Image 1 (spheres, helix red, strand yellow):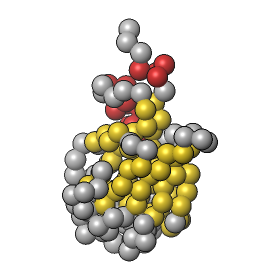
Image 2 (tube, helix red, strand yellow; image 1 turned 180 degrees about the vertical axis):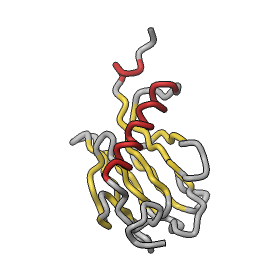
Image 3 (tube, one colour; image 1 turned 90 degrees about the vertical axis):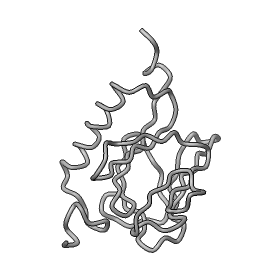
Length: 140
């Protein structure tokens, strides 16, 4: 597998790939019973996307003690965490000194802010950060 391959954790996916995932995330949110809040959508190549509600601090890794467990060899035991800053109302993804890193737009980054619809990679997992405001989920 080449480093340019979208299936490689260090490769930058094609431009339309990220757009397609955001579109799929929108479709998932339109038909799912997700409540308002901050969510992480996991696009594992072998399963339907799963949604994880984010806590003020959400840990991601192979350990069962992590909030989001990604059981694959490319993921470190404690790979990363997402932190919500209530003062600035921003979320940040921090790499926890993982072996394979956290990738956003083809760049390996130690820490970066997350914005609604951001697509990033941890190992072979493609994750989409979603903020779902209260008014978007009101009952008819």
